[in-house]
Image (tube, rainbow, N blue to C red; front, side):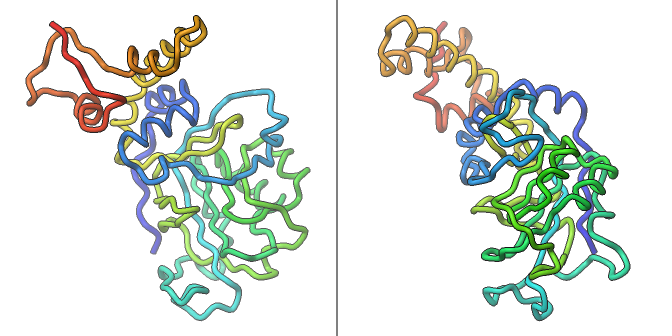
Length: 273
């Protein structure tokens, strides 16, 4: 059976996250020691247009819906490397694209080294009808014109002219997948930024990320202002990447952001009375 889906993201959380860039999100995740700062490396934006041609910067934020593919003809329970696969949970009389949950960002994981695509025009169209907000393909895509016609953010590692039946078979939905060293769980949050890339925010880190972001961004804005005025980067970092509070709070009432920054910090926290 598929894993149960966590409760939907509130519109308030989505609106707060949409104020930032993927780089801002990774800065916060790095402070929280999330592996790889959540960045899904090496993806190419194939829709609405390639990132190098992007003129709009609207980000898309949504919980993840995962689809795991296995090599065609693979023995049940074994991955191509001899490791274990999760149990199959896609009914034989149901197509995986028909299972995509509305309001989610689909993440498709293809076995490495394959030259066929696992997402093309029909699959993308069906997912759009299912009200999916975007698609990440850790593998290959095809039918680029049709993908772009959906106007969905669609990312992939490469292209192909061959359909998924060439070498891949859908195996399971709503299971944990690993993409370039990043563990992606159902309900984690995809942050798709057409100008910068894709970051996955672990669901249990959302509140901490939102708490850290304003301070991190404000500090960097001040650094940039002073660098523009001629200050050295070292001095600007020293001046602004030290977080201050006018009243030293008791250790028992330190916020999550204070605790994280105090432990990791840009530099350190000074409490000035």
